[in-house]
Image (cartoon, rainbow, N blue to C red; front, side, top):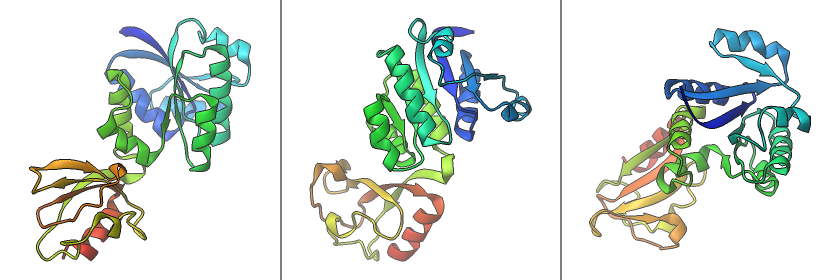
Length: 232
């Protein structure tokens, strides 16, 4: 078994199950923790060992190795408040530990940042990480990659603009943000610039032409609806 890093997963959730399975497949050792005993039978069904622990007790967190040999802590509770509290507690015990926290609301992102989370897993931000690669550790990247695609049906997709498309001839600021579709436009592959990738965050108001490729992130149904409305 690989043991370069000690990894703790807090919260027995769909995300933590996927991460645990990915860690297992890569032969990394880890401990999955929650404070709800009702979840133990569900964990057994998934073939996972779930340890009961009061995450609000600093002494118990230290007993798990935080401050000594824990390199990664995943805060994966379904409750944002729990993830913020856990992040604060862990960082107070070990400022150098890497904390990957998931958020379920936009309001919690800033709170997790202040609490000290190194990486915040928001569905759209996680997908963007495929491009920006904010985490350099290969094992964490592979975990996030495995968790994102399939998480709430979030996908990243390329959309090629056709001659007949309503987008042909439009400017970027005329289609971004893509209102009413719950999509995030990451950028455009420009045909005339030899497929140079232009990030929307760069602020260029680029003219779209047939053959250009939009890179979008969102739910499959929303992507399909957008393509149907604008590419036919």
